[in-house]
Image (cartoon, one colour):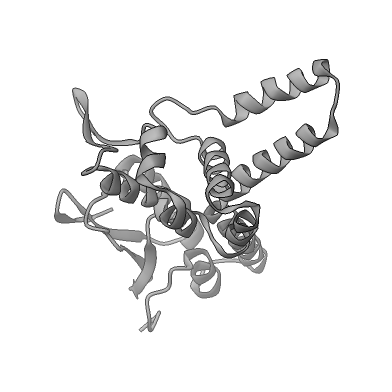
Length: 233
């Protein structure tokens, strides 16, 4: 059986096991695969990276004692970057807010510790409190055909649920877990590890499978769950 175990590196698997690729095509796929591995840690620390940069940038400028006309230009740009976004999460805003709260609660040294040891998921799990959720006006919602329904707000009962929803949407948690399960008569069989809550976006998934077919140069099937039932793309 190929693969013996589920393989989540789909690009590498295609490069190594497709029987129809030319050498230069395998090289190009491997280049893209290696580049994607470089960006995964970036995606997993985006909130922390942006928040840290904004906080340190502000500290540096505040320490320079620059004339008001220069300082006002900085403040205008800074506020545009870290402002909250309506009905969505601005990573600059959340990261900047949390690092400042950590400094306020525990001191600047704790900010350096957090920067060294955490990624976005563990960072938010460790430091985001009910008070923060309330100040940030965080809430969860479902998008229905004719309306948007707020499901939880950051009160005493709902803030933990709101926090868990946020954790599922950041870093690698927003990326579906898809792996190569088998090769069946030259057809590539992919499997989506459904999390029990979020279905794949079928429009996007169909486009991804078309791209995978172009690389594999044979049929590609993706097994998932849609509306609580098995579904094949």
